[in-house]
Amino acid sequence: MSQQFTNEDYLKGIILFGLNAATYKMGLAKVLLAAAKEQKNQLFWDELSSEFFLLYKDRIATNQMPQQGIAHRQTAMERIVQQHSSGKLSASDAIEQVGVKGFIDVIPRFQTIGTNKEIVKEYFYEFDYGKKLTLKDSLLNFTKGQLAELEAEIDARWGLLEGAFAINQKQFQLANDIREIYLYSGYERKPLTNNIPFLSGYQGNVCFYCGEPLEEDIHVDHVLPRQVLHHDEIWNLVLSHSDCNLLKSDRLVGKHFIEKLIARNENIMGSNHPWKAKIAAALGSTLKQRSTSLLKHYQNVSTVIGTNYWGGSASYNPATDPFYKKLITALNN
Image (tube, rainbow, N blue to C red; front, side):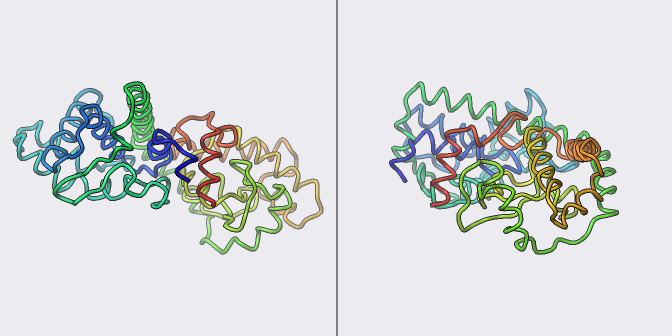
């Protein structure tokens, strides 16, 4: 596998395909690149804490964007920076707090792609928690050009996360109102694997998202996240690789996937399968009604999720992303 990917590929995989509930991975990646520029092979905990604190202090002072998406909550870093700005913590006390509270999740989990802990395990650093990070040549050997490109990638990703988090927080009440609509008619999750043979026939045994062949580890995924819709109706179910499902998680997909879902549903409507009546009952008896209904659901979900798109943008399509296709092949081997 090491021959398939470059060091740059591995770091981009961490940044682009991490499961980011907050921005900590972006912050740590920037600190690591700064150390690589200076050719430091070790980062002791106090230095790491200081760099992390100064980075967040500057970022929050500059744009004051939320660093996670849950309304009325702040990350530990936001609280520490806020306490320092209000005079409740000195700079040295704030840095000490960062060392205690700032790295609990991100240091052990940084070197993962999605939920896969093996593909980049200890690839860029080893750590003695609370004491130091030992950086490896895979990080220190980046060229100036690679460092600049990676830093730009991190900055862009960080900005996208902040934008998504801001929309989620600003639309918190409206999002909850929309959730209530679906909760009212929702039902508890049920086993979905019995739908695999049926759905496979309408997907040609390829993943709905990346288009690569499905092997043994097949997931039944909700295109529009179940955490919003609260149902398992067939019109919203597709087959995917387990890793595509996990990497997509509860993020929003671009409209091109909704159009693809509409087309898939219409293939079912052209059959004599019993699910045809269920789709008609849920979405409408004509193509126009079904398309309108599904797009309305998509709009509602967009209001709840905001711009937290899988891949960072509405246009992202893993089926046309060569790096993703190479990555998903490796993850499935």
